Image 1 (cartoon, rainbow, N blue to C red):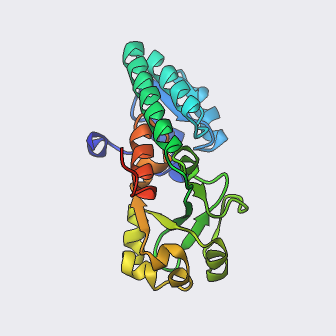
Image 2 (tube, rainbow, N blue to C red; image 1 turned 180 degrees about the horizontal axis):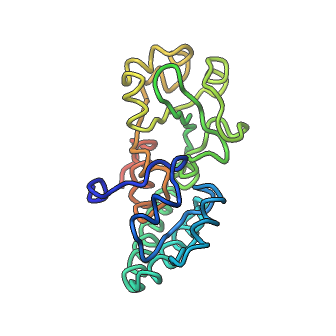
Length: 225
């Protein structure tokens, strides 16, 4: 929340080297492949220190990024505490998964209004499903494809997962249930339409265990300690 009060350099597609340099930073941390390679080269050509980190959507990648950033900020001890907390949290989730017999199928929907809905398959932003004892309902799809009734019915997901803002953009759960094909699948029949904060779900940052725990709870509501 604190970050919302700070100046913004814009969305990834509109970020410019001039806008970053104008803020007179001592250090620039750049996520590889998040911005254009041309922008990275421009920033590296300045006298400002630029550090590149990679986002591979895995716990090991998250830990590696924390270590790199902590070192640059001279906060190594704090970084190791974060990493230890992630490891402990992951261990607890793994124990829960061992007690779960079924892996529910989850259809992940990226929505920006009724007219713009896509489903995410393998190599999409929804890889956290694999960690919480669930499975992507459309693993045969690479990346994203438009949502259609035929694919929805064929996948027959147990849950349909939205970003919270995406769910709001289509009109909420009742509106989702009116989408062609939804009433014919398990998720629709049982009204199992779920949503999470998009940044929490997909960023694989220091809060990744919090995200995994929330997703586990949503997809395994009958689980008890």
